[in-house]
Image (tube, rainbow, N blue to C red; front, top):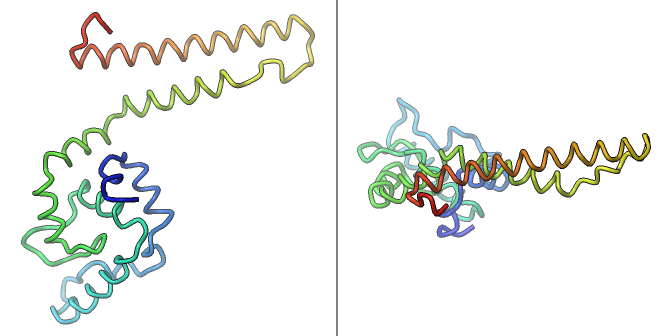
Length: 177
């Protein structure tokens, strides 16, 4: 995943990519964080090791995007490494991309959008289901199953339509929606 792709990806997908493909998944988590009583020389050595581990990671861009969205790193402390960046570097990146990150975090919180995605998936799944898959019960039973499926499809489509109408109205589309 490139950094451009990561910027346009929702949080759940980024997290899944990191969970599935990070090089640090089997590493000691303490490698990436400075201990409270750790000397600077020892931390620099571990920090270098952590940065080296991150360097060739296939999901580094996703990890960096998550770190920026999560607010990791502080400009006044050398306390961590994430995605091959120090806490100070992450803080600087957050400051440089504050507007974009705020929009990304807002989109990540868009539960209505996630609900719309879920309902659309359910609609497609239901529409692709054969109501006659259970042939026991005769013609009346088949008609009842078909009617029940149609009712479910109508209900799902109505929910989707309502969410879209509400979202468009809030975005200023007014009656044209």
